[in-house]
Amino acid sequence: MYFATSDNKRIMKIVQSTKKRLHLTFIVRVVFAINFICAPLLLSSKPLPEQHNAKTESGSIHANSDSLKIEELAKQAFYAFDFLGDKQGADSISQIAIDLAENMYKPGLLLLAYIRYNECTDPSLHLQKSLRYAQEAVNLSKSQNNAQLEWQAMSNLVKVQIIAYNFDEALSNSYKALAQADAVKDERLKAESYLLIGQSLEGNNQKIEAFRNYLKSSTIAEKLQDLSLIKKTNSTLSGFYNNTKIYGKAIEYKLKQIDAILKSLPVDSAELMWAKYDLQSISINSNNNKLNYSSVQEIFAYAIQNNNLRLKRYELALYRTHLIEADKISELIKLYKVQYPEEFAKLSSENRSLFYRIKAFFSEEEKRIDSAMYYFNKAEQLIQSDPNKILKSNFYQRFGQFLVRQGKPKDAVEKYLKSYSLASEASYFAYMLSASKSLQALYAEMGSYKNAYTYSELNRSLTDSINYLSQNDQLLMLEIDHETKQREQASENERIETDRRHNIQYMAITIIIIAMFILLIMLGSLTVPSGLIKVLGFFSFILFFEFIIMIADHKIYHITNNEPWKILLIKIGLIAFLLPFHHWIEKKVIQYLINNKILKMPRFSVKNNKQTGTKHKKVDIPEEKL
Image (cartoon, rainbow, N blue to C red):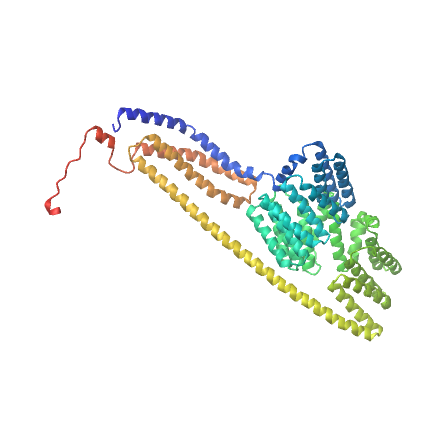
């Protein structure tokens, strides 16, 4: 016996209580297993920040049936705009919601109606009304004592101001939105504020500063691993690169957006098709009007199957422009008269100017020249009311080309002069140069050499201007490339630092686990209560197996691409092995340590020495050793 009887009783009580606690071991392990399997699934099922923000807003606004009516009307308006392409219908439905809120005399309800109006309609349809409602929303939000609502109202105002080309005001309000996002410590709202700042700066032609703000937003999105935000930042960067004619990067970021869409489960098929439509637009700009016909058919099939009329019309417009630019009028006739005659019929009532232009192309292709002339003249009358000067310049160039083909150079000169004038007013050098070259050729053909010389000189001047702009574009590309490389280098340095920090932590955890097992073996060689060995063994093995699970997590996410069902299956299989093995190996090791002493160390007990009166003998040291 190494312990006194009284001590034995005390130790036995400790051991018994320890055993009672150890009976919970299996339950604890099951809890760990459930956590291991279900934690990522629970995390993936959390609402997105937009949903969370909506719920926050609803604290005082959505609590009654009136707010539900506003939300239902907003859904109908959004469907009318985004799926049916009915801008006026969406505006009318949203106006009903505002009228309803005004009759209720509830500021919170009216604020909700104003916010939803600008989110579910096309602000450009009634621009002044959209601006007024957006400003009213900002004013009302200040009385709600809700910073997130203030941010949402302010962001809507910025978006409408950007559409209205009020870039200075938009920039000022974008910084206010950033301050509001910072006040609520919401990184997602900060990222979206940086996007608004970037868009305002880009509108003011401050492209480098705009690009830096886009990169800030992208960095936050990547840190948060927020797929909805990643989609938005990649889409914005793709549009930026497309506008600056860096088409390779534009395609790269559009593909990143598509990848993020596919990772967002369930996949939003409409969002995916719109991204593919954008990819087509970039592709046409980058490779001289070439188009992937299989992609066109895919989008058409989806739009028809899902009654997405807006997507169908956009795709038709893109395909129509491609066919006209490629001079494939026979394919255009087949598109409208064979495949989609109902869309051609809609054009006659919805956009008669475009309808007459297409009829003119059809008539010329069918050798009905008088009819073609009639339709061109009708289209010219209707297009005068269109505010888009670039569109009108392009129309007059096509009209001039038609007249040249019919041997009417004088009439063609008149149309090219109008085209040049409109392009000059819009400062669109490409159309200016095209019209000027045509005028030079026509005047030379007509024998008007003085005018031909004048336009020849103008061509040189325009070419120099375009070359100068091209050089500026190249400098801009270099600056953007430099900013991109700096960001990539910073990201790489951050990744290296993160890996180093993680490796240090892994090493520390490994050392702690090894130290705990060494201590466990040493305690097994000493005379200590078996309960102490069991408790230390319990925590040592828990730490060891949780460390294994932690390492496995990273590999599992990488292998499965965060697919929940794949993660679930792999983790069930892993736990099916680890849980019983954990229980078995812990039991065996602890029993062995209690019953067998691995290290042969002399038994030592201070209490036993005192109780038996044992004294240390004096050892005589020989004199020669002194």
